Length: 519
Ligand code: BGC
Ligand code: BGC
Image (cartoon, rainbow, N blue to C red; front, side, top):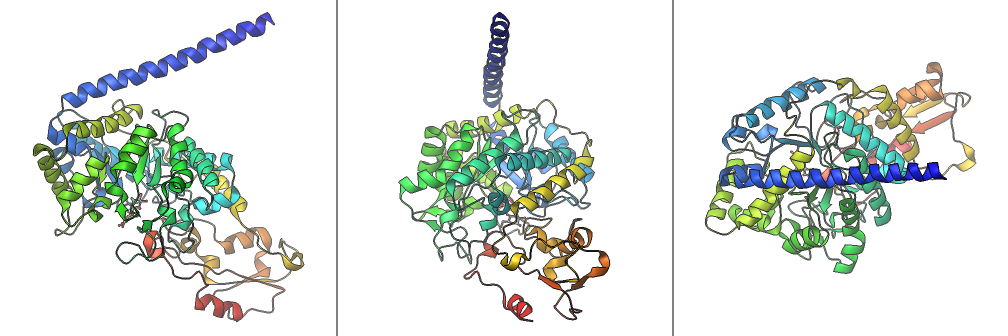
C-alpha cells in the first residue's frame, strides 16, 4: 500500500513536471516569437506569410530577396532526380538561402503526403482514405500516418497537407477517395488518429506538421455548382449552420483538441460565399470559438477565386484570417505570382486596408509552429535514414492495410478465396497489371499515371506469388485467348484522377469495361 502510494507520488511529480515543462516551453516560445516579430520589417513579415511551389521559383535567391516563409511541392513537383537524397539536397539548398537573410528565419517545406509520401519514387504507397475508412481501424490509420511521417522526415520535409477530413456525400465527386467516409463520426475518429500519427501527441522536433483539410464543407457541394469546368469540386454548400457544425466542422473541432498544427481552407463556398474570404467561419468560428492557434493556410491559388482584382483577393483573405498564402506562383507571366502577392500585400498594409495586428497574428502563428518543430535549432537536414523510404516494414504495413480495406460485396457459391487448388486461372484486364492504375491519383504525379510509375506489386504479381503457380496463371490484357481456364478473374475500374478532374456525372463502369466483362 505504502509502496504504491510512493509510486503514485512519484508518478504525479513526473506528470506535473512534464506539464510544467510544456507550459514553460510554450511561454518561452511565445516570448521569443513576440520579440522576433517586433524586430521584423513589413517586408519580412509578408514574406513569412508567402508559400511558393518550388517549380515556380524564378531564382532560388528569391527566397532571401522576398524573405519567403515557406516552399511547397504540389502534386508531381519533384526534384529532377526523384530519389530521397535529392529531396534532402533540394530542401537544404533552399534552407541555405533562408539562412542568409538578416534574421535567419528558417523555411518550412510542405508536401501532399496523402497516401504515403506519394510524390517520392519508391516510397510506400498506402491505400487512399476511402479504403482506410472501409477498414475503419484507428490504430492502423495512426500507424500508417506515423510510417508516412518517418518517410517524409527521411527526405527532410516538415509538413504534410493531410489528413483530408472531408465528409463526402456525393460519390461522383473527384475527391471522394480522399475522404475516409460519408459518416462524420468515422471521419472524425480516423482524422484524429491520422493527426496523432503524423505529429505525435504534441508538436515537437520529431513531428511532421499535419494539416486538416479542407475547411469546410468540401464533401457536400451541390452538383453543378463547381468553379470553372468542375462539376462538384469547388462548388457551393447550402447546409444550414447546425448541420454544417455537427457534421462538417466536427472533425476539425476534434483535430484541434488533438493539437493539429495547421488547417487548409477549402475552395468551396457556403451559401454562395467562398471560404477563402469567410471571416465568420475562419476568424470567428475556427480561431476564436474553437481556439485554433496554429497556421491557417490557403489552398493552391484559392484566394484568386474571391474577386477579379487580385489586390481585393489578398485583402479579403488575410482579413478573413488566412495566415499563410499558397500563392503558389506560376510559369505564365500573365498570372499572378509571389512577387505580385508580396507587393500588393505590402501596399494594402501601408494604406491601412489590412491591420498590422492581423499581420502580426499571422506571422506569430507561423513562427510558433516553426519553433515547436525545432526548425530554428536544426534547419539543415542530414541525409540519414533514407532507407526507411519504401522499407520492407512499411510495405508490409501497406500490404496489411490493403488487405483490411478490401470490400467483398458478394461471394455466390463460395467461390472465394481462391488458392493454389483453384485450378487454371486467367486474369483479365488492363488494371490487373498496372501499378499506376492500382495506386490512383496523387501518386508520383498530381493526376497519378499509368504503368510502372513507381515500384510495387501488381495484382498479377500477387496472383503469381500467392494464389497460383506461375504455370497455372495466364494473363490476358484485353480478354483475348482465355486458354480454357477453370476460373476467370476480371479487373476493371477507374483510371486515376485527382480533384475536379475526376468529377463525374454517372458512376457507371466505362463502355470498355462492360464490353470486356461481356466478352
Ligand atoms: C488541393 C490541396 C493540396 C494543394 C497542394 C490543391 O489543389 O486542393 O488538397 O494540398 O493543392 O498541392
Ligand atoms: C499541382 C497540384 C495542385 C493543382 C491545383 C497542380 O499543378 O501540382 O498539387 O493541387 O495543380 O490545381
